[in-house]
Each structure stands twice: as structure tokens, then as C-alpha cells.
Length: 239
Image 1 (spheres, rainbow, N blue to C red):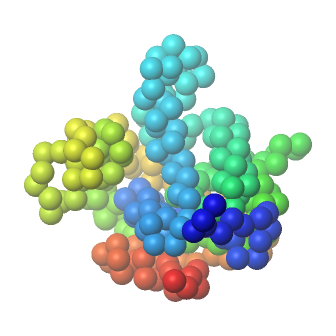
Image 2 (cartoon, rainbow, N blue to C red):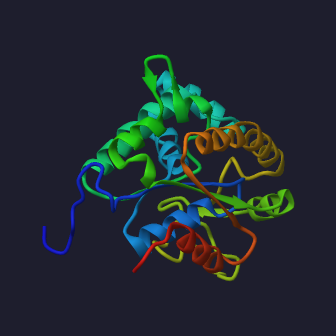
């Protein structure tokens, strides 16, 4: 295919990046910037799951109904269900020869490392990218920043992009879709999500460090383009 260089499994140039951070830290924004500027495929687990849970099928499918109740309350979806989806997508994207970036996933120890005969996402990524090419970016923001950024946030009902505070348009600036408030973005739910982030994500990152995965901490408080510059520097990306 002209204009594209397809990479094979375990290609030393291919990268898998996991962007972690509390709600409102800019995980999705940084993943989108890596996709737009460096050719990564952004697998936004939350957006992907939400699209499933907002589908017509979710009104009658018992599994999707169960997961939707968890999702809308701010709690994490069932790890086994999320893990199977994430592994399938990671394998598919790697098989197509692309770098991959996750925003906020894997979210539990089970999703990251599996259990018993079930392998976790980290083992899958190691198999298709190589452990030396897996990088974790930890975005740091204060709880106050997280709550301020998320509460009252509007996102497009079609493409999912957030509405910028500086833009007064009543519709999405990209696709003109109607804007909506996510069920996740009220103060009480955000506080639940912050607690779950601390209790579940920190142990995952510590365990990844012990297994030799590269982990970089980046200040997520500045403007997104400044944060992006630090992410690019940490990942040693060259345009």
C-alpha cells in the first residue's frame, strides 16, 4: 500500500503506549495527539465501551445492560469483559503493523496481568510489540483540577470530542454533532472515579515497573501542547 510502512510483530520500531492519569488529566487528548502527529492508533477503551453501551443492542443484551449500569455509576466495568475486548483490538492493530496507544487501560490488575490460564493485556502487548517497546505515561494533576475539568464538560454525541471552553458554537466544531453531558461527569461520580483510580491504577504501574516496563511521569497541569511536548520527549519520538 503506497505511502504506508507496515510493521511486523516485534518490529523494534513499533511502540505500545499506555497513558494513565486521573479523570480530566488529558489522557484522551495526549493519545489523540500521538495518533495525529505520530501515526499511532488510539484505542480509547472508555469511548469504545461507551459506544457499545449506548447502542441499541445494549437495551436488550443482558451482558451489555449489566455493564452499562456499572459504567453509568462511575464504577469499572467487569474486568473479564474489558480484557477480552482490549486484547482482541491490540492484536488486530499490531497485526496491521501500527503503533498503539491506550488511554487509561488496563484499569485493573486482572486486566493488566490476567489470572491463571488467562493472560493479561501486558503479556499480549509483550508478545506483539516486545517489552522494551512498551511505555507508560503517568499524567499528574490535582484532584481539584480533575473535578474542575470534568464537571460540566460537554462532549459530541457523534464523534465524542469535548467542547473547548473558548468555542461558543452550540454544536461540535468538528462534525457539527449535538453536544451532551456524559453520565460520568458529575462531581459525585468523579469522586468515585478518583478513588478507584488511586486504588487500582497505582498498584498496576508499580507492578509494571517491577517487570521492567518503562514508566514516565509527566505534569498534566499545563496546556495540552506543552504536556504533549513532554510526552514526545519521554518517548523519544522523532518526526
